[in-house]
Length: 467
Ligand code: FES
Ligand SMILES: [Fe+2]
Image 1 (cartoon, helix red, strand yellow):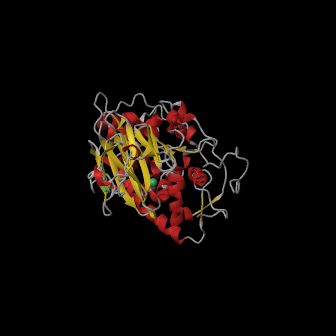
Image 2 (cartoon, rainbow, N blue to C red):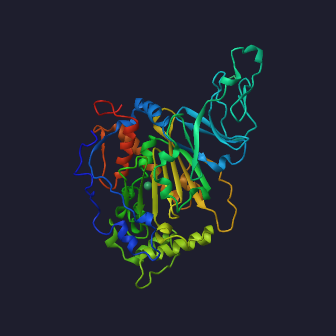
Image 3 (tube, rainbow, N blue to C red):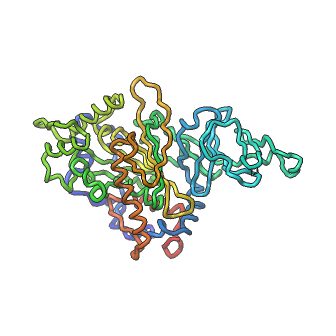
């Protein structure tokens, strides 16, 4: 099945949009892009169809919990949330739940969030704890996971303190994120991350602070949410107002054949989309960008300059004036463009400064048609300042919009446009009589990579269809 539908040998280059590619655009920049942005993967070239039932089937969602979620390394939260001894938060994933905390001696731990007595959920909310005490009958464990107190101890001759330690998941950190893995036998996080830490050397996310943290329920499968963000092919349908200054179809998509858990795209900003490029003069593009607050009103394109150069200058000024960030060490591409990586299964990470976001999608219980979608704004700490405390998590109710969150600035309205399409995809998938999705060879290559890795964790049933 893996080799069905290939258009040729794996080294064949996939089709590309006519006109300049991302690397050609970088060639024109005044402050040259670093080597990491000059790399280009040998993205595979194939046209295989992918079944839709992975998004809609309840049975598949159950298999997914067993075979995927209980085996992969996943981001539970930020290290800042468990900075001090006793700090804790709860990480829920489908019906599984962990209490992530820092022990008195400074270690990170993740305990199953279920009392060993009669199963009660031990913790619901973040807090700085002295110990873990069950709210039902008061069984108590130390932060090290040792049984400390059993009310009416005389009534439980069967309990041995040694065997009544709280069960643990694995914990590790990278990039300022706390990762957990439910599988005690899983390979280390460093193996799971493959080359991602190398790629992010210039953009240490552990040095950033959480400037906004917003989550909401979305009526779609968690994979529909992830896939809605890892291509820019949808700009023409969902965000057409961005076309004058966003090179959607000029983007570079990197799927490294040897990497299972990460891939990336590089989207040029400050250049018109090939869909509209010939229709707009440079000055007209800048006038439109001014309406979006991306350049000052009245900005002119000087003789011999370009829309990209003008927009990069405006971005540097905005980052320096509004956020106190010294942009001098950053190339033009890092200031302006979208440098986006995915981390399998459910994380979208951004390098550079052009789009300092983070996305996470998690299943909502066992319901294949609902997920929690979370957005973080991860900003560099202003020059000479202390790292600010992380923003409190805000949960948006059904009637609230991403654009109701002022901290998300111009990303809010864009997220509202994405928000509108995701439940529509889910409803359409349920109504599908074709039963497959057909992916673009290049622009949707990351979706294909995602589905390939997903199939490795949750193998298709023998007839090729899920579940
Ligand atoms: S269920 Fe936790 S103490 Fe009884
Ligand atoms: Fe989008």
